[in-house]
Structure formats: structure tokens, C-alpha cells
Image (tube, rainbow, N blue to C red; front, side, top):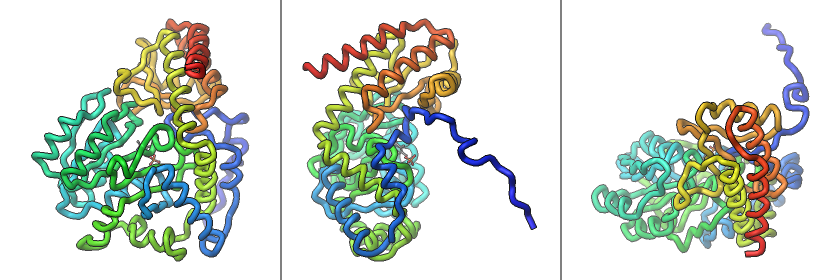
Length: 398
Ligand SMILES: *Cc1c(COP(=O)(O)O)cnc(C)c1O
């Protein structure tokens, strides 16, 4: 018989004081979301049916859609991404994947595995996708499905022209899938007005819930395509028609992640109470204040202002310092977690959900500046913190 291993208990593994999660996700969760996440209820029955009914109602508000076809998935944002393509793409489907970085490429990889005929539109580093470039691909390649991220977390790029691109693609009869994992509820997204056929999100970013339960919305038009597929999708767990059993017919698909669903219900409830308008304003004010503070310290931002994502801020790593050392030091000494990156020489600070609170901004900016100084960079921490304060005050009075 194999004997039981001797391992440390969790309280010895976890840091003695929780770290402030200011990276590219997961983000801090409100206390009421954590409480909801500690509850287990029956995955079927009247209580769950009511929870799901309310979640769909709240999700329609957050996605700005009147479509009935809101579904959840037990899985990360990537599972929602995969659910969107697994149901809309089948062997031979032409898919255009707009790539501003890592997550754009992930859609291309997923679509290829599904037998799609995939073309990628690789946007140069740091730039937003241009309408004319997308139009050229629509004309020539005639994709049936287009994928694009509203905010590309990996390169901290914002696809500013998203509404023009999605509406144009719709005119070409193309089904448009938008990855809003990091942007949902942090900045405007109007699924119906912008003619989007599928929006995917994750729990642990803009919505400030836990990782592992994600939401997806399909348009009526997308749902018709799903109903007329030549064959069922290859992934049983991600089959939208089977997910309909749980999300629309109060019956069984797989055992739903009940605690995570309750957490997400609470997170959506907080968004509805705050209202999208107030939430967008809070995110903008905090992120712009943080950006001003970072620059006033003497550091530079990666993405130019016109394509800069406010939900995740990318900071160029100063010469002579390693990004990994910054992340390690700021965590050890200041108990703040920020993110490195995949390939680019930047570190990233998230501005999603609970990360956009003034007390978190001051602590993070101070920690970032002090860490850079500890590592030998020439930064002026006090000027940065003062500029953050001015930035926050300025936009309150503006
Ligand atoms: C984080 C992220 C994903 C993937 O989400 P996971 O929960 O890590 O699978 C996809 N797209 C974007 C834009 C993201 O920020």
C-alpha cells in the first residue's frame, strides 16, 4: 500500500498575511462574494432555478443584450472561449482570428483544433486592430466566424475600434465572437448594439468573482447556427445544447459548480447595484490616475495612449532590471502581487473590479516605486504618489 504523504497544512503554505492581488487576475473579491463562495446547495431544485433565473437577468444587463441565450460553464475564461468556438465552428468553417497577443492566438489554436480553416490577422505589437485591415480580410478570405479580444491582457492593448469592426463583420454575414474576459463591466460593451454574436467572460477579472465559473452569451442568430450544425460539437462538456438543459430547463447536464455560481451571482448583484455607468467611471478614474502616477515616477507605459488598455496597465521594465525580479521583490517586501508577461519586457498591474479602489492604488504605486528603487532604478516615488492623488482629485472635479 502507498503510505500517506506528510505535507504542511495550508496555514503553513499560505502567506501569513494575504497578498494584495494587483496582477492580471485573479483579482481581490468582495467579502460578500467570498461568503457566497463558501456555501453549497443542491445543484438542482427550486433554489438553484431561482439563482440561475436571476443570474441570466443580471448577465443580460452586464452584456447589454436582450438575447435569451446566456449560459455558464464550469471552467476558466478559456473554457468560455472554447465553448464559443466549439459551438460556432465545425470542420471547414473559415475563421478569422484577430491577434493582438497571446489570447488572440489562443482562439486561433482552438479553432484549428476544431477543424476550422483559420487565418490570423496579426496586429503589430502595441497597436489596436485597424478597421481597414479587418475589411481587407473580410473581402478576401470571407470568414464565417471572426474572433477578437476587446482588451488583450497579454500586451495591454485595447481594440478601440471594436464597435466598427463588429458591425462591419456583421454586414458581411460573419459571426463575431468577442473575448471580454478582462474588460467586462470595466468599460462599455454593447452586445446587441455592436452586433456581436458571442461574448465570453471569466469570473476572476472584470467581474471580481472567483476563477473557475464563466459566462457566455450567444445572439439569437448564433443560436440558430448552433441548432443547425451538421453534427454535435466534439466537446461534450462544452456543448451549448446540453448546457441549455441546466441554464434554461432546470435539469441536469453536469453537476454545476454551485459555490462558484453563488459567488458569481453575488458579483453580478454588486455590479447591478453599482450600475455599469458608475463602475465604468470608477475604473477609468482609477486607471488613469494610476497611469499618471507611474509616469510621474519616471517610468514609462508600454502601450501608446490611443491603444492603451485601462483594465491592465503594462509598464516597461527599466534597463538593467529583470521583470521577474520586480514581481518577486514587490511580493516579498510589500506583499503586493503584480504580473510579469509572456514575451514582452513589461510588468503588468490590473485595474479590474476590486483592484480599482483608491487604497489599493496608493499601496500598489508606492510598492512599485519602492521596489524599482530597491532594484536600482532611478524613480521618484513621492512625485508619483502625489500625481496619483492629483489625478484622482482632478477627475472627481472634472
Ligand atoms: C485571462 C484572459 C483569458 C483566459 O482566462 P482564463 O480564466 O485564464 O482561462 C482570455 N482572454 C483574456 C482577454 C484574458 O484576460
